[in-house]
Image (tube, rainbow, N blue to C red; front, top):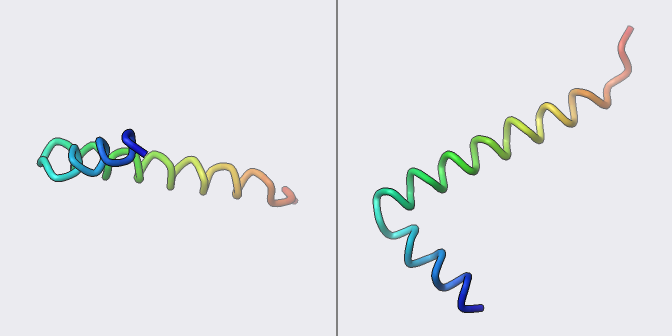
Amino acid sequence: MGAILDLTEKLKTPGGIVTAIVILAVALVFARWVFNDQEPKN
């Protein structure tokens, strides 16, 4: 629980917000790449 509270405190800083956006963007690109890879290739 303490780690989650630590993260929310870090997100309140500008650097934390930028880091969160970067992590979300990387996760989104990775998820789209994985799901695109599963489509059958014709």
